[in-house]
Image 1 (cartoon, rainbow, N blue to C red):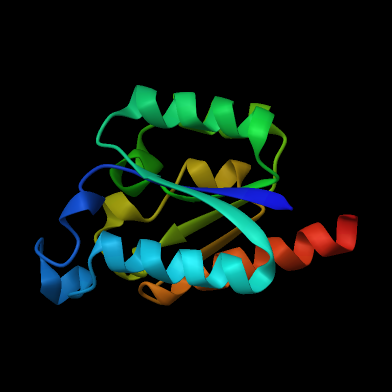
Image 2: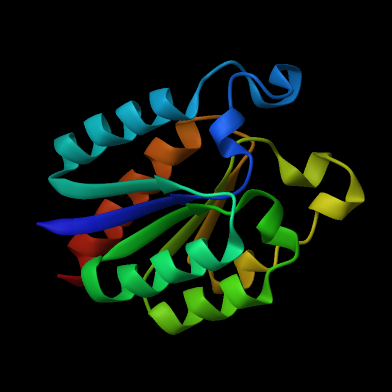
Length: 147
């Protein structure tokens, strides 16, 4: 069974409460439940985590390199600032799908250029929480085609 790490960056623990007009009312716990259901139906195991600390995200990417077959990551604010996260994802040599709940290209200019995208196999943005499920499905298909 392939394992997928779903990693979430800063402030995503506040989903459903923080700026619901932008991010919606779905909580991170609800997204986690949906990811578990999706992985179960795809025959994937899941590690789902959230942190507000850049170094912790980097450590989890290093861990995934040893224990996972792919990564789904919503780096949140670190998308635009973290060279360390970019380098860790590149070093992982795993397929990576970057997810954003909002369409970062329709937001303020500061959100338009994700460094993490440079390491991503694919990027899903603007589809809300569904983006996580689509990312997992895409990784499952990619893993099937490379098996």
